[in-house]
Length: 424
Ligand code: AMP
Ligand code: GLY
Image 1: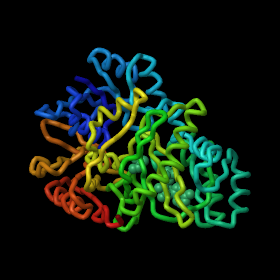
Image 2: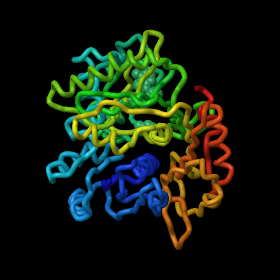
Image 3: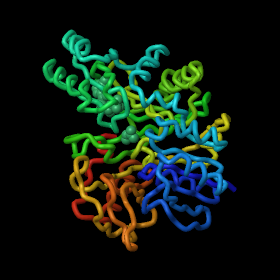
Image 4: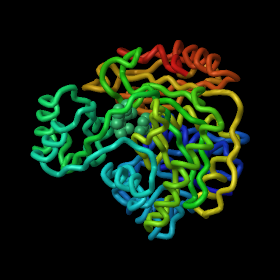
């Protein structure tokens, strides 16, 4: 029997811990540091989980804990620790880690690397230029006749893409980026690229460094308000599978995007083990890669993992050992509705009591994100607080059931989108 340590504290990490606890090989799950939802007693067919008060950045403490507790596999949730090299450090300490190395993770942590890599390997993406100074960037945007977008090179927590409408607006934005005001060091380099149009799909895949197997395609809802209005967030809800990609199209994307990416990374000495997340746009001219991420999406993980029929532990260890052969998925669909704090994605308050969690019917999954426990009461502790998730035979039923779950839950100022999944 195996012991697993999940590193992180969001809804994605709760979904990972939950799916690992259902894996027959797992006897114990640890989550560092976790949240109010990631600790539970075990029961038949479901391993116990315990929170460990160690932050993802404290790698020496994670190593000590994993060694002292016989951890067989460490699973990293978020991109920041990967970009900081957590995989390399844990591996050097002799631990098995499911996550890309720092070098492989550059596919997310440097957009300039990702774009140049795609160009080198013929992977379809928007036309672009990379700039390190204000004058040449402005000269370039002024020369463009088509609409464009501006992106910061480094990690910017989902806020690094800007869509100016005029050359003057673009010049003002570029000034702010190069002065360091907008993104700090993440904006030392900018990418200016052709603006694409079309529906977006998140296609995530498991990779063992050679074999890459896609998950059901998912769709995130990034804006705060219904109808894709308002500010960008980390994601207000997701569902899977999306219905506008056929099995043939997924096979085509696997051959033309996922496989060449994993092969190309190996050829460049950046063997890619972990989740490869392709953010795609279905343009009138074909599929284009908007970005790669080096980990599960949040809330995509909450909408994808409940559909997994294989043991997550078996799949992740097969990736780490370079022997990934197959992954089974359930029929049906899954929808996850995020409940957020008032004010999110701007300033929001914390510490508000959450009620009704114990009344939510058992078939509805409530993945915790920004929650903590105080004096026995579960309270809010972040912008995105919970993801209420349901699996059903059809997407329509999954959405209905997830929203039924939302009805039981309350905290002051709770906001959520009412249109998750309405554009299947
Ligand atoms: P990224 O962080 O690169 O995925 O970009 C975040 C969001 O910005 C995407 O989900 C798109 O909605 C938008 N975006 C990024 N690149 C482009 C592009 N070339 N054209 C149009 N929209 C884009
Ligand atoms: N939900 C988008 C992401 O995790 O990057």
